[in-house]
Amino acid sequence: MLEPLEERLDQPLPAEHLPKEDSEDSELEHIMGRPPPPEGHNRPHTPGTPTLRPAAAPRGPGEHESRTGGQRGRVEFSLPSPISPSRPKSPWGRYDPYDATEDQDKEYVGFATLPNQVHRKSVKKGFDFTLMVAGESGLGKSTLVNSLFLTDLYKDRKLLNAEERITQTVEITKHTVDIEEKGVKLKLTIVDTPGFGDAVNNTECWKSVADYIDQQFEQYFRDESGLNRKNIQDNRVHCCLYFISPFGHGLRPLDVEFMKALHEKVNIVPVLAKADTLTPLEVKKKKIKIREEIEQYGIKIYQFPDCDSDEDEEFKQQDQELKDSIPFAVIGSNTVVEAKGKRVRGRLYPWGIVEVENPAHCDFVKLRNMLVRTHMQDLKDVTRETHYENYRAHCIQSMTRMVVKERNRNKLTRESGTDFPIPTAPGVSDSETEKLIREKDEEVRQPPHTQTQEQECVTQECVDQECVMHDECVQESVQEECVMQEESVQEAEHCAELC
Ligand code: GDP
Image 1 (cartoon, rainbow, N blue to C red):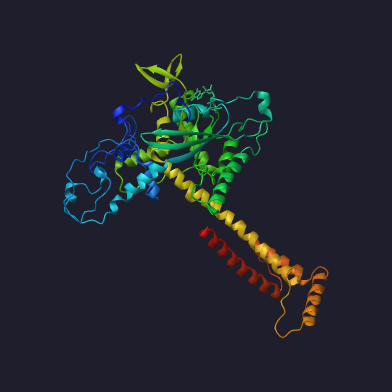
Image 2: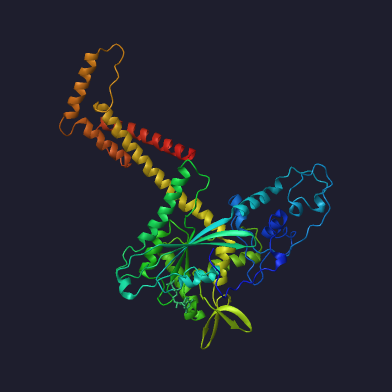
């Protein structure tokens, strides 16, 4: 685990708030906070931060993982033990979902504890998240990452001079830190792309980034298709913060190229870098321009999940504000300064102080809340359900094609009689078999435009799904191959499912 920054902002928790080792109750208390307040109470929120809740409809049991944020308005359950004998005994003590006065006499099966079970299991396992930062160097990527996670991830960074950068290719570097907050462990991996857009010729400089993302998918695909799937290391990139320069007029061609090349592979969240160099009006105009261009070029950035229609107005408004903030105008700083008697992370200028965490100065808090508190699990879900699924489907398709080709080649080889011994059909003598082999050999030795060549050509066309018209006999052959291919696809899919 890396050392926190010297001037780390977060204060150590008072001893009484620290989890007691080996005490499951205390562990739960610190992990989950206390049970949610009854209906009508204020939504839990952390002081000084918007009360935005995750908007996504539950996508699966893992959903509970990300929603362990600050819990407020807690209600202590100090009720006596259940009196109804049919009431399930839950091991959750005061986190027992049935532990309410109105529940005392009702009969229950007990599955309301399922969320607790999932929650507990995932907390024990810990969480991981991989964030990629991309964009021209000098736009404040490392500073922002340090500000976001209150760590110094770039201690050993070596900056290149202009001469070295002329021919520099895009490098991919990975930093991993284990962060623990209130008993919840997060393995955070930051993937940086130094050198992006730095060379004189930046044609296809996004390629190594795209390759890196694919390699992680490939590794995961191999791991989950292998025999031991117990401890798969998930290095898939869950989110890419793409830094847009505040000095240009909207997107540059390289920005468009990068985002278009990667939008099917990763959740892209665009950010407007160094927002303190722009006036509020300029920020507003640039955001509108960038959003228009994203639309115009058909770039598919990460879409925040739609909010449910039954959500309250306040929540809907917060959700809309978040969507309107794209691209998040951010400011980063590695230093703590004193503003209005408080020590805050900020940038000190001769004319004043820019506070990183002041919502009036930039969208830093919105971005951090979105990334960590409200949408981390959704980013992971979209990575798994959309981007990885696309990769996997593509992989299976290619594998199927290879299987079909291989099968056809084997079929032809078999027919030529070179590979396999031809079994003697019952009632056929050995000399007759030899005659058959000789005839087949003759067929194979025939010049071009023989049936063998035609069949190879038809097979290839079928594989490429461009079955074209030949004569009737060829069409029949195509149909046969198509049926074979379909069978192979089903076979491969069935195999992948089994894997
Ligand atoms: P990277 O190369 O993209 O990782 O950029 P760095 O984080 O190394 O920052 C490059 C320079 O920009 C450093 O001098 C930072 O202090 C400065 N910087 C970083 N963030 C900001 C910001 O939000 N506003 C301003 N004005 N400068 C920043």
